[in-house]
Each structure stands twice: as structure tokens, then as C-alpha cells.
Length: 168
Image (tube, rainbow, N blue to C red):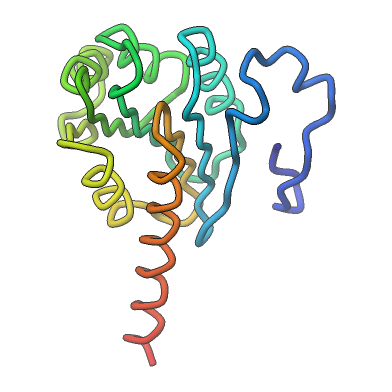
């Protein structure tokens, strides 16, 4: 999927998808409250590189944010460095068994301390994300399970409905 000049989400031409090693069923693109979410939960090590390439090539008008759940990934500092170098990530939120190592790698690659966060689990990471996201941001949920993506969408919808009711 890709953004077009009309800001509509449309299927990418087949030539752009055939080189991807990530199975289409392993990745999902959603839009919630003006925020693009790329959910890449069941990725292999090779698939992580492709997911970061997709993030870099995504037409983001805002920040490129990566939430990395290392509970099911074997990841370390190299992934944190790749998120910044290959994915052009501007904010990294990590959790799971190697979350701290991913954060150290992102810091080593030049991200400010304020833009690198380690959370206890994916639920805490989603809550943090929901409070920091702005329309135009693109978020790659790397290694996160489907329920984390659903939870983030619910939190964003809830935040939007609360702001609408407060404005009224």
C-alpha cells in the first residue's frame, strides 16, 4: 500500500511489492486519526530490513516512529542502529527482552535521549505512543502482535473522541 498525491491509501503497483520479502499477510497498513500505522508483527530478520525500507520509502508528512517489541524477535543494538540509519526513524520506543539493547543502538546512532524510550511491555508502549502521536506521523510496529496494533488504534480513537467532547 502507498500514499498517493491525493492522500488516499491505494494498493502499490505490483512491481513495488514483488521485491519485498515480507509476506503481505504478515504486514498491515492502517490509518487512524491521520496517523499511518504499519503493523509488521510476524517478520524474520530479513523481513525487518524490508520493513525498515518500507518505512523509509513511506510518504510521511510527519515523524517516522518505530515501536519495536523484542519479545518475539532476536534483536540487539544493530537493530536500533538500523532503525535510525535504514528506516530514518526519528523516535524509537522499544520493549521486550532486548528492548534496552535496541534503545542503546538507536542512541549510538545519534537519536536524542528524549526520542528513545524503553517500556516494560507493548501495552505501556502503545499508551505512550497514543499520547505522543500527531496527525501525519507514520508508525512502524515492528514485532508487535496484532492486539497491540488494535490497542493503539483504540487508544487513538478514544483520545480523538475525548478531545471532540472537550471542545464541545
